[in-house]
Length: 321
Image 1 (tube, one colour):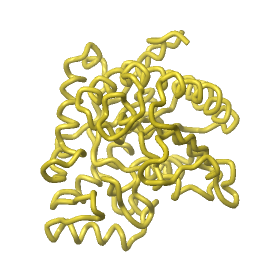
Image 2 (cartoon, one colour):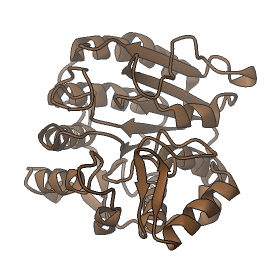
Image 3 (cartoon, helix red, strand yellow):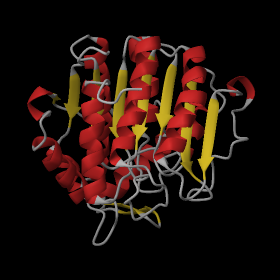
Image 4 (spheres, helix red, strand yellow):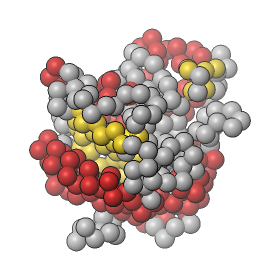
């Protein structure tokens, strides 16, 4: 049995001000619905609330090209626009994107200081499609990638494991670390699908060969198949890697009710995946684990999955293995 965990919860109402326009799937109602579900759950009073503060522009540049960062700031100052065909930005988006990254950094600080054991950041916009040079796929800055570099540079913990279970492959995260043996990137995602990357033969380059692990999944894949890959492929690879900190790109758009994809994970299935990741964290890095929201576009499926994910972060014995 696992002991009860102290789980941090990071959210800011300004995340609702990132305006993607009418009918866009990545809309503020996602966070409104998820937050309401968490507040109405039995775990709300036990979550440790942590107030996000904005990341600095220098911290954003741990991953992103200076010209790109400046171009986004200028575009937002001028009233917004589009980074690509499906990634709108509004006047507030640059500052909100700094506040999103800041949530992850604050959570990391609290975990490393021993104030909490793990944390979940309920944030938008998501991040894992943002490459060092350009945003795309609803993403402005790569929140989790910046967090990985922050852990290395400001907390001197050298080895980071990123687990990405979003419906889509995190091409931006893979790009950031493809030749880097200090960051192990694992992604499980629907394929063939947007953005077209993440084949099983993409395993890294140069010194980073073997530190990228992709599992493309066919449409219709279910919880049991994901659990098997997590137990039999991710877990041994992660334990061999021995990370100092684990980050989850927690997209819940692989949920069976999500309108954008065709993966059939149940809400409880995300709890099972969370348990396995908590096992890995307990075995390798004293439980140091931060999870950040990526996708998830059915409000009911997203909300239920977030609550279950938090329950399992707090008590990874919710499901017996």
